[in-house]
Image 1 (cartoon, protein in one colour):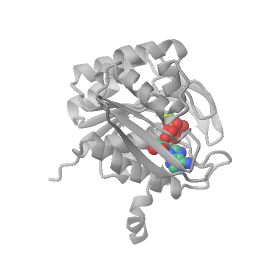
Image 2: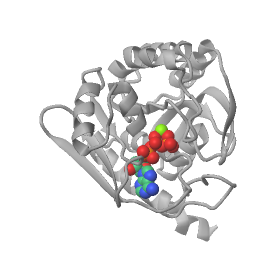
Image 3: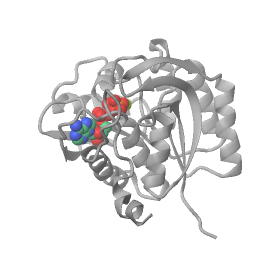
Image 4: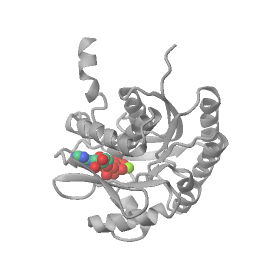
Amino acid sequence: MMSVPRALTIAGSDPSGGAGVQADLKTFTALGVYGMSAITSLTVQNTEGVLYTKDLPGELVYDQIRVVAEDIGVDSAKTGMLSSSEIVISVAKAVKDFGIDRLVVDTVLKSKGGYPLLKEDSVQALIRELFPLALLVTPNIPEAELLCGEKVEKLRDIELCAKKLLDMGPRAVLIKGGHMRGSKAIDVLYTGGDEFHYFVGDRVKTKNTHGTGCTFSAAITAFIARGYEFYEAIKKAKDYIQGAIEKSLDLGKGNGPLNHMWNLERCTEDF
Ligand SMILES: Nc1ncnc2c1ncn2[C@@H]1O[C@H](COP(=O)(O)OP(=O)(O)OP(=O)(O)O)[C@@H](O)[C@H]1O
Ligand SMILES: [Mg+2]
């Protein structure tokens, strides 16, 4: 019998398939990991934006995590859209109860178009309940600004903010530079001390960036499930996201999705 790494995403559903749970499961699959999902909220969205969302009760989120953790087991997990304090608290309880110790927290606060995906009064719950349980938190620039309470414009600001975020309890902080300007997309990893690690990619000129954050954190989670330490996992995930953006798909009328399967091209041709 084949053994396979097992990863769980705890996130919102995106019917257009480019972000959220759907993007995470595609990413897990493309990277050779068995994917599972606990859905937190149903979003009604497409490439043009989010129309509205409907949260699931915290208990239902907890039970989805429970049944897969008790039955199949979880080598690593990630969180995406958590929407409310009730869901944040349920997820934190499940992570503790079922000993999920390799957790990536993607600090999803708003959609690309500005639709709130975590209520403003739930941000403190996210920091208090989930940050101390996280192996890694992955804010983008606007999220870093909100969590740190100051403008993040230069690399120096990113480093100072990363230090602040590390003090909130995660083992490591990765601030993503997708929202910065310049010819490079630079992500900064901080694990303590005076050293910062930079992951640098060429910025791709494309409007097809629906789900970049979800896909990137899912890729990190997949490589962690496969046993890589998080520095290596991030390096490999950065290569994967770069290819997925370069080969993105012109679907929909707005910000199109990435090509989650770009690394399997040969495999699809064979079929
Ligand atoms: N145009 C681009 N070209 C190359 N890399 C990019 C581009 N946009 C984002 N990235 C990279 O994609 C990853 C995700 O970062 P980003 O800052 O877009 O996340 P995000 O804002 O959380 O995404 P989302 O809006 O989907 O939540 C990072 O590695 C970032 O550097
Ligand atoms: Mg994001």
